[in-house]
Image (cartoon, rainbow, N blue to C red):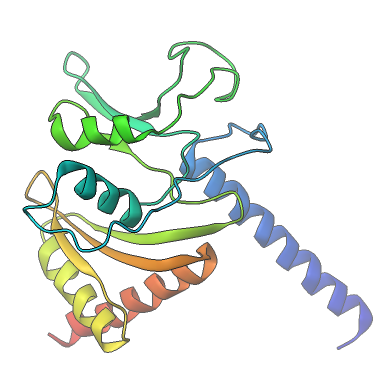
Length: 211
């Protein structure tokens, strides 16, 4: 490859990576273009051992925290405005209605107490940020909505099984959608997790088309 063409290809790839990075930042809506503090602890999972229905609440909470390991310096909550008929997710901060970046508004940390409230209180729904500071994650979720949500979700599960990817299917709270979860035994590069999910989706599309 001629030298100018090689550098042109590298520049295009760099531009693509920058665009992807910005897209992920916008999707997560965490930093608002401001770099977060250097120390970002994660919710380190602790193996609770075998957990059953008869296990104490502490063991069940530990199992949840092990499966859904995430950043613990920030978490989101689900809000609704009946008057405006709007709803969404926002980071929980000490200055909830202040201006400036997320870090200027001082996000509240994710704690075991917050998770316990989420699991036991139907009025509190929290959202986790799975992308860790080192660009790894502990789990992957595929979200399915629309009139064919369950059909698509089942196709994804079948495709994942054919690729040797273990996953669990969950009906969403509304009853009209579904989530499919894959949990890792250790943090994996988020890019690899995304590539795995993409492969499952592509195979699932083939299964649905064949049906």
